[in-house]
Image (cartoon, rainbow, N blue to C red):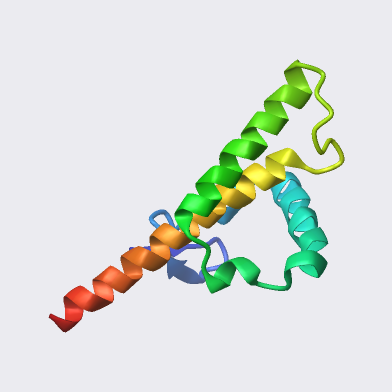
Length: 113
């Protein structure tokens, strides 16, 4: 279905397409990008894209959740200088990344069969 603008131009209606502007907080995304950029010197660029087992992400995720809550509610001082929420997000994104990669591999195998 086409959408017509006041100018007379037309475009495909984008109602069914992903809306990144509405779905993302660019403030939060900027914070996460700063976190990821700070880790580049330690781990290298695109390290996570090389493949990290989901179980490793899960263990790390739980450690960062624990640090976040102990620091926030129990006066903890566990890696307080690190952005625990960004680390949590990294691990969640990592799990999602690996799941998507695995699903795509499965789809390719099914197509060959």
